[in-house]
Image 1 (spheres, one colour):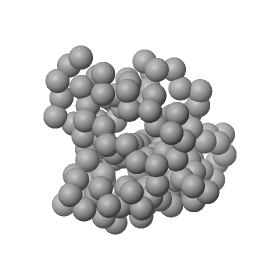
Image 2: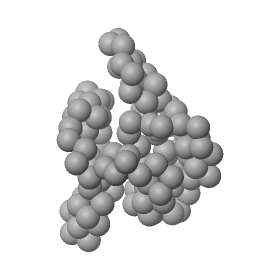
Image 3: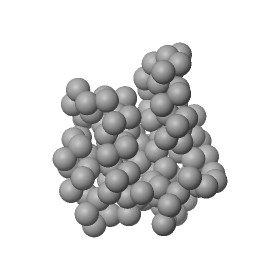
Image 4: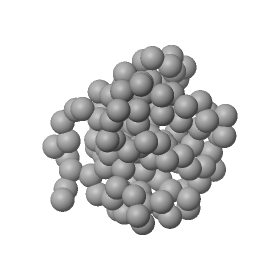
Length: 130
């Protein structure tokens, strides 16, 4: 485990997926705040300034893309990593490009997932606002 000062807000309604992702990222030294609902994530953002939002394509039947846009109103500029989804859907790709979301398709090999999180956290954040 490498120590890090990065905090990740993980939002997925599936408890099994949430637990596995949280365990993987915690072992890498990240502080992971896991939530299963949009309301829980909004509550967390009142006191939390995460370095990354990881979100699934649907959160309790709400499109993850819309949830991520809403969460960015609470924390402008937060990088978003969308896990899974219909990556061959041009409409989804276009929406994610407009919002500067990163997409990582399923299935998710553990090491590739960790590598992608690291890449997004260390990448440019030119779309951020203050």
